[in-house]
Image 1 (cartoon, rainbow, N blue to C red):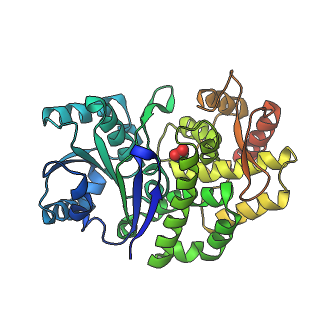
Image 2 (cartoon, helix red, strand yellow):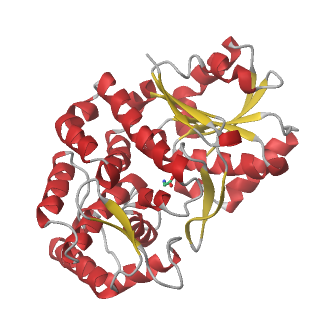
Image 3 (tube, rainbow, N blue to C red):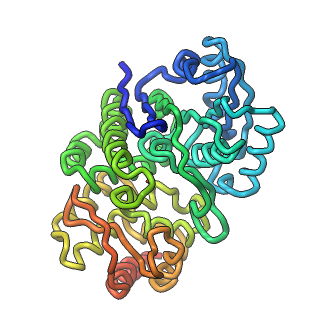
Length: 374
Ligand code: GLY
C-alpha cells in the first residue's frame, strides 16, 4: 500500500508518495507531468550501481526514454564544479522548460539536481526520488535546493518545489547500517522538535524499525514527512516556523565544517548530536528539564547513534573555534546567533538571544569529555 502526504502550496503543490515498489512503477507515476516521453536522471555512482537499472526499466515500462548523468558520491559533489557540470549536461541535451529532471539519490543529489533544475531556463520541474532515509524524511521534501561553498554548507541555493516525491522504502534495505542510522538522526529530530507522541513511538519501535521491519519503516517515514509537510505548508520560505526543522543544525553545521564534511561525521549523525547538544543548552538555560536531556541521550545511545562530541574520532577545534564556525549559520541575524531551543521533547522554539557563554560552556564540557577520551 502506498501512503500519500499532500503538501498544499498553490501552484507549487506537491504529493509525497511513500511505500514499496515506487521505483518499479515510476513510469506510470510521472507520466502525467510530462509533455514528451523523455526524462533526464541525475544520480551518483553508488545509487546507479544499486538501482539505476530498476529506475530506467520502470521508466521504460511507462514508455519513457531516459538519459543519466552519474556523479561521484559524497558531500564534495554538492559544489560549484558539479553544479556547472550538471547544468551544462542538461543544456547539451537540450532539456526544455516543460521537461522533468529526476533527482535520484540521497540528500546531496537531491539538493544539487534540484538546484540545477531550478536555475536551468529559469526553472525546469524536478521529481525527487530519494534513496536514503535522510532524503526520504527530510531533504527531498519542502523544496530546499543548493550547494556548499568554501564558506560553509548550503550557502548558495533556492527554494524549488519538486512536482512529485517518490520515497520507495524498498531501497532502504540497501543502505549501510551507518547511513541508515545517520538518516535516523533526521527521523528522531521530528519527534524532538514537534511531536512527543512520535518520539515515544520511536522509543518503542526504533530498534525494530532499524532492524528492517517494512511496515514500521513506512509508518516512520510517513509520520516524519507529515510533520515536515505541516510546517512547510505554514512557512514555505522559512520566515518563521520552518526554522524549527533546523533543530540541532547550528551545532551540526559547525561540526561538519570542523570535520571537513568528511566521513568523520555524516550529516544525519551531526543532526542527532546537534539535537542532543540543543537539549543540553536548553537545560542549562533552565528552559528544559534535565530529565528530558537524559531521555534523548538514552534513546540515541540505545540506537547506537553518535550523541557526544567524544564520539567523533580525531581532533576538534575548541569551543571558541566551533562558535566561530557557527557565524555563517543562515539563522544569524545582525551578527547574533539564533538557536532552536526546546522546553522539552516536542516543544522546540526559535531563540534569538542565546548567551554565547552558555553555548561555550556546553561545548567546553563536551570537548573536555572529548580530550579525556582521545
Ligand atoms: N531540512 C530543513 C528544511 O527543509 O527546512
